Image (cartoon, rainbow, N blue to C red; front, side, top):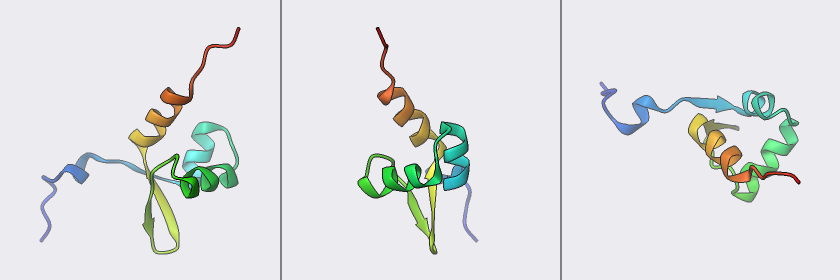
Length: 67
């Protein structure tokens, strides 16, 4: 039986649809970010799961002050 003490025990994974909703972009935009390597993801079968922390990091690093 697998233990939940590993580093992945605390990682929350989001679906592409959840990432798109959080970022307020289309699912296609999220797929482009994943395929380009800008947003890390894990492939599960035919779908992708994105670590929630990776979404926060991407948004924090992409933020710029206008003006």
